[in-house]
Image 1 (cartoon, protein in one colour):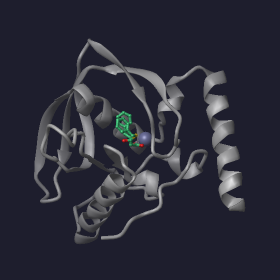
Image 2: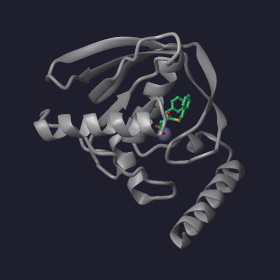
Image 3: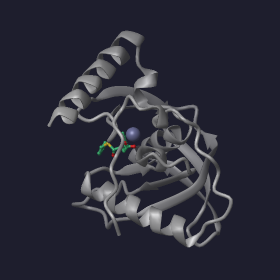
Image 4: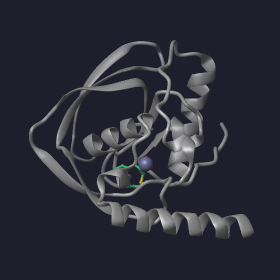
Length: 173
Ligand code: K2U
Ligand code: ZN
């Protein structure tokens, strides 16, 4: 398994709509493993292939809180929300591609998601709580959408300017 580099916003590859996975190959299964390893190392609770600059509809998640729950690593190919609740939740979101920036984002509190598993089986599951927030955040990445796109323009510009400064400093380092 290999740790991959996570792209930092702004980056055109984070704005692209990712291509559907035609079939789950060994290479894509290996990529999912690398994504899980990269996610745990970050640390994070979700990661989408476009964040590694790869335009595949593939996300990984493990929102199990270390202390109380047993880890539940999930790899979802071609995930799609097939139902979302009227009720909405606000969560202070962050993003591994927008480090150290957090803001409140409102989303449906519960969603039903259908996806293709690494074994090529179609699964459906009802997510609520942090899992629901995370899966919607990750599916947004597959559609080139970042959590800052839900913020007011001024706030979004502030965060983008900070990231541009961070990238200039990283380039100099
Ligand atoms: O896509 C990503 O950048 C991974 C995010 C996923 C996420 C963001 C907001 C809310 C839920 C999931 C990273 O996991 S950000 C780090 C983090 C860790 C724990 C809770 C919230 C955010
Ligand atoms: Zn993110």
